Image (cartoon, rainbow, N blue to C red; front, side, top):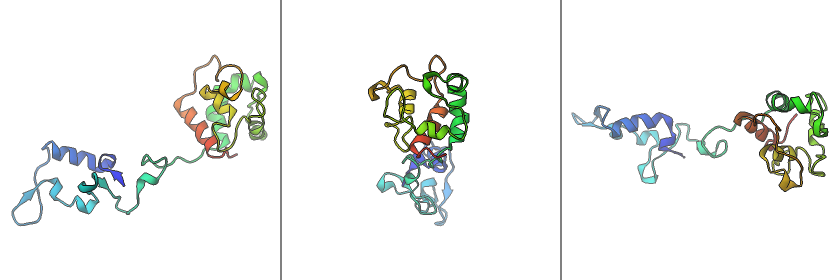
Length: 181
């Protein structure tokens, strides 16, 4: 069940009704008029006895979608999306044009194999462990917990702007989603 305040379509009318901004609406019982609350909110699935929850018209429970936030789950990105959005722009100066730290991130057919290989800084920890962020050294380097995993050096990217929220989310979803090709 979605909370009343989470159901975007009901928030504005309910707030306006509470503020007295909506006129009385006929309830269908003679000449009586009522408020918005008298006009079929129960038909919309609102149940004030259970904390003001709303059942979507299709009867589904939308809070089970995605991460439990009521938002639909975003699809797992592909390696090509991660490479073009994260690896090339944020890591390319050091790990494509050069191979600093013995890590070459050139987006070619062997990139995924190189990412699934053991990290040279924290062997035998793989750079990417599909489905497991904590066991992925690349993720730990980005989030700054690489030293706890036995790694070396500084968080990445080094001497550059940090990754954007979009880049971090894309990398996180790719690794957590099984690091598909």
